Image (cartoon, rainbow, N blue to C red; front, side):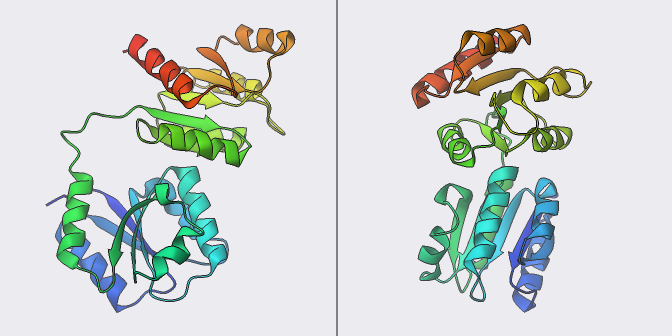
Length: 252
């Protein structure tokens, strides 16, 4: 019996199968809720932070726009999805949802015992080392997803594409480090850093700048804010991971 958790089941419509799935999850002590995929997936976005993992039940043809929007929500909120569908639907899904976001694929008709065993394993994390959590803040979604791919195997990674979104994320989630872009529209990286420092909750979160700016004036401005490091976006995957490992090792 798990006796914890919240799973959100997503599909084009609620029906006999999704209600049965919720009943089976309740039997093993896992809470669940149902949300319909719709044009802008606003409801999915609203429940993402309280959801441990999503279950996407592909019972009908799902529009690519819905899936693309769903994929963005998963990325931004650092969530994954278990997919239940027919094998020929997997190729269609991959065109709109990245493999890195798909935790597990189950063929229809669903092997319920295998599904529930996987859910039990998902929640049985007592023996696993606790991963550090890093929030990436960058308005360039392509670059941010690249960094996410570099870090996801070693860290829990959140993403925010603006300063406002970063602050909203940090109010609801704990982070061990913020990896911040310097130059962003509306509110710049340094401005976001200043706002974080003035708040009692976020003021002690270390910030590491990751930016394409390398001129002396910018470097001095950033150094004066006292971040834990200042890295250029030309850094390699190995270089970035080395910096992060060194930082966490020195701050244990």
